[in-house]
Image (cartoon, rainbow, N blue to C red; front, side):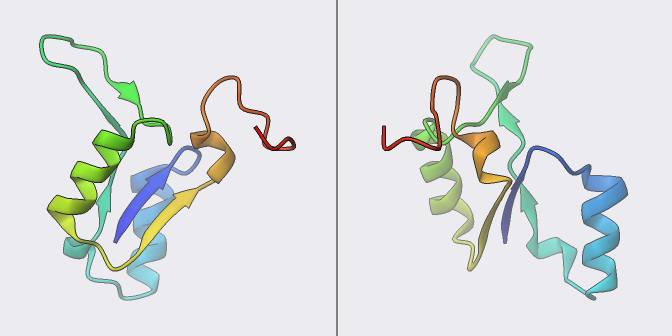
Length: 84
């Protein structure tokens, strides 16, 4: 499973939920952000970062992808109430 979360903490929210569901946490990967070579600050992933997401999907081949919440990954300047 590939999990992208912009609101829930991995340790205090996601992990307890996975444990309660008796999930194999070795099969869960959280895509939180990425860094460009030579940079120290991590960038947040948006749905415009197709190359990052595609590379992650090709490498992991997850059966399930969760984007929670979707609107957090749309990026700046995207109005989800308009067809843009």
